[in-house]
Amino acid sequence: MIRVLLADDEHLVRGALAALIGLEEGLEVVAQVGRGDEVVAAVERHRPDVVVLDIEMPGADGLTAAERIRGQCAIVILTSLGRPGYLRRAMAVGVSGFLGKDASAEELATAIRKVHAGGRYLDAELAAAAMAAGDSPLTARERDALKLADRGADVREIAAELHLTEGTVRNYLSSAMTKLNAGNRLEAIRTAQRMGWL
Picture (spheres, one colour):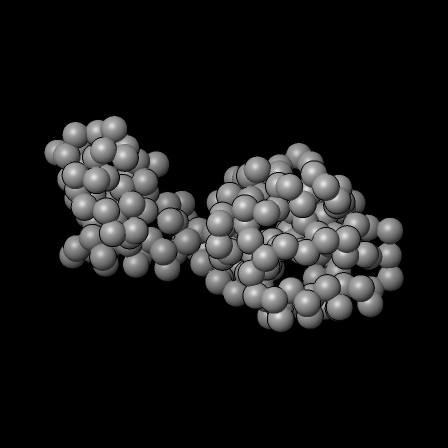
């Protein structure tokens, strides 16, 4: 029996997934959580073989949760956000499966079985889009500055948070805007989010 933990902030979706997985031979849902910051404790408590994570959750996103449980179980990301950068980031943090929420129950079950056996399962369309989009042009510091700007932080606050000078922060933001061909910070943030680079 393959033990599965589900993490999705939408109660109805999570319940439907649990019911569908429960109908599959050899699969058992042993736990469900609705927040990304609950995943680590649930993995420690229930010892699942495979964790199915939504990408967008409160507390911690699916990629952050995946990084925290890497090596403890196989991980499948299930997302409605087909952003090319997400697939690349998921692979970088040790995710073995990546597919859209529009996948059938049979496809999800196949993905769970495959990653449990040590393989990989990637949605073909998402993989093709990720290959076409290429790598993120942003450095880690540019990404950090944009994330903080997206939360409403001004240059002074970003500088304090990142332990940088205000001039350095302005340079990072300007560089990010140039790389993303954006006229302002908001446009740069939206472009980076659309591509899955933030």
